[in-house]
Length: 93
Image (cartoon, rainbow, N blue to C red; front, top):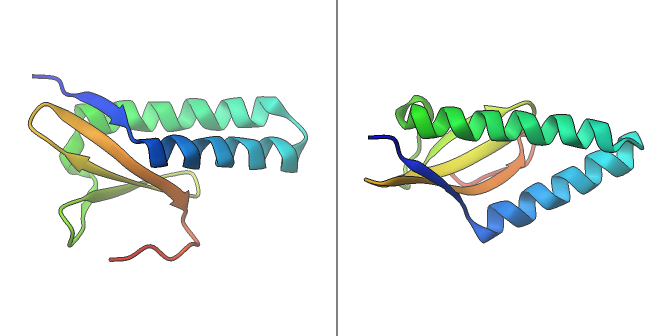
């Protein structure tokens, strides 16, 4: 059974901030659009193969998309994207 993926409110805020930052930094909405596409490709891969991400201590998993850490939790019927942060930022283990 294929699982749905849900993007949490926190992850939506994270993604919005990331896209705004990339667009402002590069001066190009195209760069932000390409990054958005990369994220959604990664979310689709997580949906199809949720166990491929590294298991964390708090019952979540993580994987990377470009320079960003994607933290998610798998449920019986869905995968929830919890947060997306830059890989240089410290994230609790």
